[in-house]
Image 1: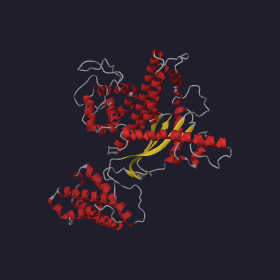
Image 2: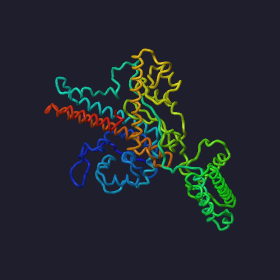
Image 3: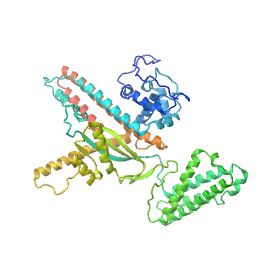
Image 4: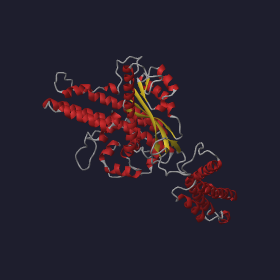
Length: 522
């Protein structure tokens, strides 16, 4: 059951602080609370529950806010609850009426919170937050004083700050393209060990031995079906090869063949126990689900042992996170990564998640859908699309030519003989490549600051929610940086009014610092 709550933001004065005083209105969690659209979130969250039956569910503000805090600070579920319990600003962000030293919920509830927000819902919320953030930035810019008579170069710098980089002008022609779309793909690695065939088969053998022991404990007569091989010797066969630094391929195949034989005997034993009356219902859900994955692993490894190829569709690389697939990236440090492949677009400075796929795919096919998405939101196609070479296909070139979109990359045919035109083309190509670094900065920031380097959630739904929340938090942080930059700009203007010699230096240093530290806002 879900009871709708009043999500109107409490004022700082109304928030009860037992140790006296009031909260700081410029605190980041106070600003985040104004940025998130709580009413729209509740419209998505409430229909998942029966309105009259069951125990009352946690409010949407508590559920979403806890996920936001966890993703922003890169915490575990347990540490997230502790931080909320100790921090009054976080409790204000979650909609509490006052500070409380009690834990708001059990850490295990974070698993359920991740299941209740779909990927599409979080994408929509991300876009709504970006629109609301742009409106807040426009309001902040409108408060900038217009002083055209000032001789201070800082005033010229303020006038040069325009919102045309990420807000479409109202008088823009309808038949003219506007803006820049930057796209690229990456991988968000899952929290698994590096998989090898021998290691997976050894883990599968040990898991089936555990299942056999649990089934044999159901009745004394079932113990006669236990396989009669030495488990210590089976493990020694695995360690004999696994401990070698560079074992020969012949030894690896021999060890794999032995582990497959042990695993086949265990699977046959489990079938015999089921026929004798043992019930898989007596096992925990974790174990019989793992048994299904082991059966598929045995089938795949049996094919790969005698096949000439080393690839197979839907290859299993982990017994618990069975959704994870190998993603070939071609990077120098890691040619293959294991996790979800994501497609990301940066639309005029704001990063948005376009696609999450656990199976490998060619990212070149995402250019046309993302361009159409851009047109649906802004009413026109982008003026240019900055992308990697893998996106520059014949199909994508023809699409961009038909819609008057400039696609980054080298032009087809011979270079022009006119040196000035050739130099202009090279300069334009260099500018597009520099702009494409924007999306690379998004990946770097997401993996360093927003926990996208290693996805700790094991369930498919939880992992997808964690990835989507990472980009949502990144967008909110981008807006917060812009607001702070404009607030400092206003302060610099008033500072220059009293001391007109030094404001330009202060404002220039602020802008340079923002550009260097935040490649997303470049």
